[in-house]
Length: 544
Image (cartoon, rainbow, N blue to C red; front, side):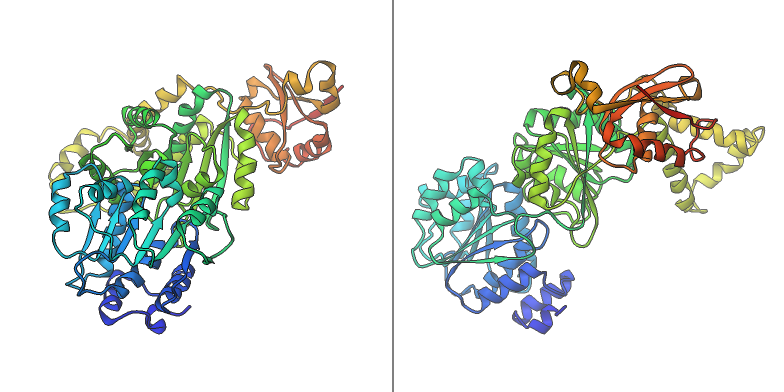
């Protein structure tokens, strides 16, 4: 892969800034767009690339290089949907141009004093990054001149339309000179984006695409959990968080109200979380985002609109607490993880009636979703305990700390305890609250009868589709519904098997699966006969 130096794209000042940042080689979208723009091409451009591939640098670096520092009025206008994205783009462009002392880059967005922005515009300005509402406000006040704009960049224009900014965009673009180059950047090419391209770009339009159109990132794994009732989503969310103790992620909700509610619940239950949504002031928003970027926050609960502009490369998980109605939005959400060479996981928590949405997502991203069972209390306890053990193993103690002054007294106080008793008490103190919370609410949250309803398999028709099995272990063997589902999935080699009724009695159990899996279950159960924890050999037979 060629480096920026080998391409020799930029002047010495930009090259030095890239070296300071640690940018060595351009991403595919950067290489194609920068080459195109620096060749002085005049055609308008659509650039499609997955989220997290460096689109800001793709348009920002060549624009900085092409700016005429002697002109007084702005030459480039970058429009974006949210304050957060506006701030992020400004921050990036300032880093790219840190050694160009004369360049002036100004962000213009709502939520802060407009008078300060007007004062900034009275000075020489080269690049403006702004949200449509504030830009139009300044134009109407005759405080912002767009007569010298040579470059218009629409970043995530589809989201601007979704947020209701069409009239503002129309009015702003009417004020721009006809001789300009317009650049449209997006992660996906939806119907909305096609409409934007035909409305705001001047023909002919060149298109640059890296990777496949409208697909998800290669380094993202897509999984889902099915819950029986909508009100079980929050309990399922907590179990997902508990089974992933090192999670650093974003939880997406549809509405501001639910975003705040879920964040409040998580904080109440002891999770390191906070929320970002439209009603926050700019100072509150900045505070939350700064804590999240610095990893003082482990979990960020957000709406789609508020999340625009979150540019963090090492997010491990994206959790769709509410799945979006459109596949393009899912692509944007899942693209927040698996960035910059890291691997990530995108999770959907869905009700059984929402499974049809997953097919649309699969078609859009070109990948399959895998169903994961909601973890059991036993699995979570084991995971958290082992995670805590690893933390202890990796902890380095400062022998000169004040703690050591008290160590002899502590040792004397605890000398009556042997090693085993000390460890037991230590863990009990650390995890008693957690154990108590789960033991009082340990119901199986997994939806079992996904395809088994009276509408589809009602009455006598049920026998045509399902086989009933007898299993010689039951409640006295510590078998639970979740444990039996795990056995069935293990026997079926984790196929997408549809499970019917489950009945666990004292010494034996009954369960149903689709008839087409009948042989697979019989063979699979025999294979795992010696690899389970239920105390006696499994015996299974079909009941007619």
